[in-house]
Every structure is written in structure tokens, then in C-alpha cells.
Amino acid sequence: MTRIDRRALFASGAAAALLAATGASLADTPKSGGVLRLAVPRDDSLEQVARGAVFDNLTEIAPDGTLRGELATGWQTDADARIWTFDLRDDTRFHDGDALRVEDVLAVLAQVGQVEALDPNRLRLELTEANPGLPFLLADSRFVITRDGQDVTPLKSANGTGCYRVERAEDGRHFLGRRVAGHYKDGQAGWLDAVEIVVIPDATVRAEALRDGFVDVAAMPDADGIRSVRGLRFHPTEAELALAVSSNVGLPRQIGRQGPLDDGRVAERWWMI
View 1: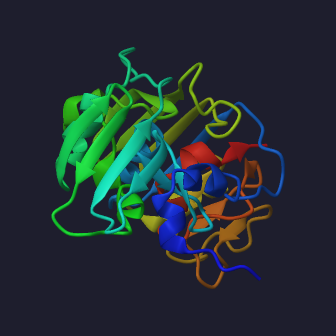
View 2: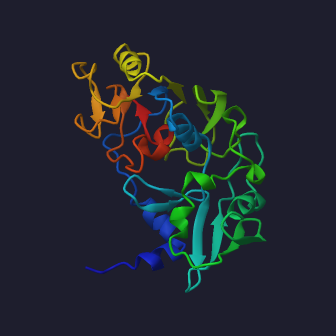
View 3: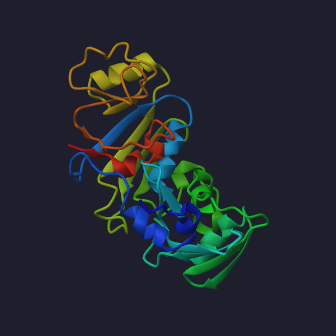
């Protein structure tokens, strides 16, 4: 079996195309439409899922742990993994209608090194120290791309390039995101018409909301109170419960394990049956 040099693969712009083809396989064909309602505790879960819905990064980590391009279509580095170039999508707009500019990406990448635009869809990043894992780093939520590098808070005024625009939001309490028409991920992600997240601090009340059909997914510390409810699924298992999910929700065959809420990408990857 031929060994693949991981560093060489990620340094190559071909990595984006290759790894996109080896992302999460789906148990069933995703269906478009519907509203997914999630109940979460008073922690960072609301912000995590809302950010994953509203914003994009240069790169994305798929549920199986592989790397793929998001706003970046390709990247290259020198032999020392210190000087990087990134190629950007040319079909991306913010939710306010403005086109993504290379300057928006420069403002974010200035956190990690010296950056300059090479042309309207290409940039150069020079690091102080070598980092072969830079494309993985840039998938972190700290590096979501915003207009001119603006702060991502408050949520009610968030302006990203993700599949969902903010329709209504109250930090720490509630979020409603509506699907963006004509998004560049059409047919690949963002199956829901809308995603709604509500903070319910008490686990017993979250269980009741799921049991009575007020929400479709509930973050749960255990299965007490819902174990006997028919049609629920437990992720990752009933014994190690993180999420309880109604039978009307379509799940990817693989769910990201960096966080219980599919690495914050629930809005893009899940669907309604």
C-alpha cells in the first residue's frame, strides 16, 4: 500500500479537492426543508452552533477528521511550512450582500502572521515559526471570516458567509437562522430551511421539551426521563449520552467528535425527515 505523506498532501492545493471527496458519507440521502429545533444548556453550545451556521472558515474539518477547503479552494507552502499561499473562492457573499474580499481574510489571518494580497483571490501568509498543521488550525472557530475582521458578537448583528443568516438572536438565550438562497454550498450542505436554538438550563426541562415535541434535539447529561420515550436516538450511545434526537431528524452516518454538537456544524450537516 502506498503511503501518503500527510505534510506534502496538506501543503498541496490538491488536498482541498481530494479530502472533500473523502468526507462524511451519509446513511440516507439528505432532504431539503424543515426547521431543526435544538435545546441546549447554558454553556457555549448556542454560540458554537450559531457560529457554525452563520460563518465560514478558510478550511473545515470533516466529521471523519479529514481536512477540506471551505472559503479556500487550495493552498501551498514552502519546504519549511513557514510561507503559505491561499486561493479563495470567487463566488462568495456576506449576508448583507457584499462580496467576500481578500482584505476580509487578511484582517483575520493577521492574528497568526504577516499577510499580503497577491491578487483579488490570492494571499500570502508568512509565519514567524514553521507550522505544517496551519490548515487544521485555520478551521478553528477563532478564525471565522468576517467583514474586515469584525468581532462575531453580538449574534443579532453577525454578518457571515455561512449557509444561514441571522433572523433573530438573543445572546445566551435564543438563535434563529434562516437558509441563504443561492449559497455556494447548495446541494452539499445546509439542508434545513431554518435552525432554531433555545437555551434551557435545566436538563429535566430539556428532556420534557424533547419528549413533548417542542424540540427535535436536546443536549442531555443522561437518559433519565427519556429512556422510555419511543423513537428517540442517543448519541453517541445511551450509556455515554451527549444528545437525544427525535426520529424526525436525519443524521449523517458520521458525526464530528470534537464536540457533541457535530463540531458546531449541526445546521449544515443534519436534516429533517
